[in-house]
Amino acid sequence: MKPIYEPKGAAKEYGDLALNIYTGCPHRCYYCFAPGVLRRDRELFHSHVEPRQNIVEETRKQLERENITGKLIHLCFTCDPYPTGYDTTATREIIKLLKEHGNHVQILTKGDGSRDFDLLDENDWYGITLSGGATRSAHTEPNAIEPTKRIAKLAQAREAGAKTWVSFEPVLDTEYVFSAIRLWYLAFDKVKIGKLNYHPSKINWENFGNCAEHICKALGVNYYIKDSLRKEMEKAQVEE
Ligand code: SF4
Image (cartoon, rainbow, N blue to C red; front, side):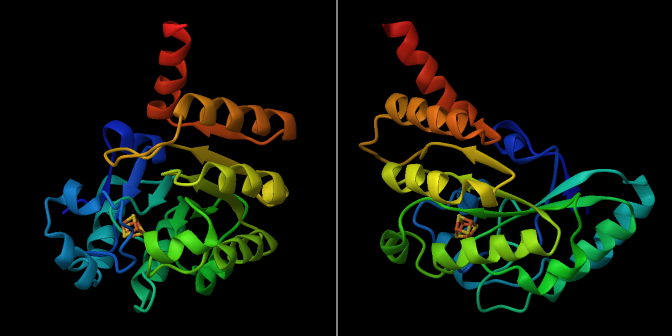
């Protein structure tokens, strides 16, 4: 078992290395891509959540065997490192292990990672996903913590000394994204912005991408436009 792996394709935009700690995720985002990626039954993925078998021990063995050090490791791609309502001791153990071997972590969550802020330093990244407004999230991400609480946790992580980032992906509500960047950009060290893929949307991605980019540039925000959104922006330019 090699828990630390190199993501391929679009997943690579999250980071060069990733590690998935849990078998599933209870947050039930309607747009969740993970069951498809893992070829697992969607209901089972959302209802059966536990640390992957021997994940801590297998990570330890891989770190020692491959002498993995000095890397930034993304937690997690096919699950959330802080599944709401579940014991997240495995996440804490994994972070400790990775850092003991000289690596750093890039967390991305819709849960609450504050129990582990004491482990993070200025080379670690604590990130949250913000897709839509607070009211919409009750329908779109029913079991995740509310977006306002995620932002409060992000601010707490920064106070604790970690770097912070926001994944605006998949974007569901463009006005929410614009106002979130304008309101809270001083709390972010980096943002990544990506479109909704594989689901219908009425959003004009060219307009959205250009507007988001304009706001980030005007405010001096460190931003990255995901490839699929960038392609929509470039496609529109070619068609003009
Ligand atoms: S938080 Fe991520 S892994 Fe969990 S249900 Fe939502 S999209 Fe899927």
